[in-house]
Image 1 (cartoon, one colour):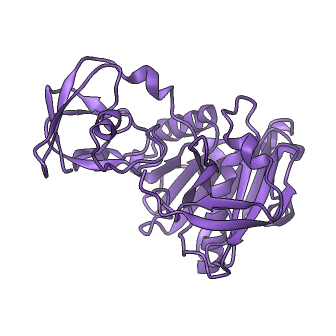
Image 2 (cartoon, helix red, strand yellow; image 1 turned 90 degrees about the vertical axis):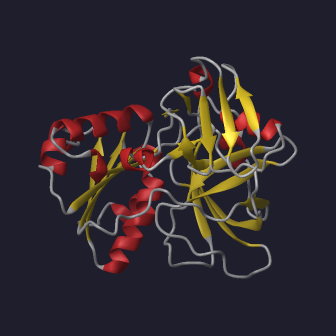
Length: 320
């Protein structure tokens, strides 16, 4: 991982719900933080000794460079990331990466429909801030289990552009593809973020209603399935065009695993096929795409995630 770490300090901490903690970070040296566009996330070095890195969306207003705001859900099956974040207190230091973004606001759309499930509201909240400043036409649909499970209600609940959909509420306020998204519109972009099952439902239902894949923008917090379980289907060779190095990738290995083991300075971050940091270009061979971030157009253009995808052909040549 080739992160240029930023040293920040937690200056504020509060619970948005019983399971969601909000952390405000400022630069340790007092300078302005790097600018970011709505939808961006940062890598967080949760545990330096263990090398534990997690990705969290920036949910504060993008125009405010005095602080970054993160909201973290305490996962019941946490591997240490969310629990480590919940242990932070005001005054604690935290190392983060510069913001990265593959979930930005479309510059082609004139209307924007934001669909959030639970903690998935975090990047969409930043989008709402940005769209509001720009005077853009947008609606935010916020789906949560209950009123108590919905974060940021103090700034969202009375906004006419926000509609809250609660699982324990009356049927007429439940989220509906037909009434809340409506028919496909070439000038409208749809943005979806939340738990995997929620996203799968929204995306499949929207596509079933005729919305084209290119109109639906998504960001996942976890891969569709365990990335390690997908490393199968035979051995192949990966060749690097810039150095000529060729390496065998076995069934139990990812392309990224092999490159790093060989000392190749390959980019990466999440190692799950959801952040896009490891993307490189395929110059020859037939890739077997197993990520959940590249669009069909990007795949056709030769982009490839080394951490999760494999090859259908015996040889895959990469622009590395």
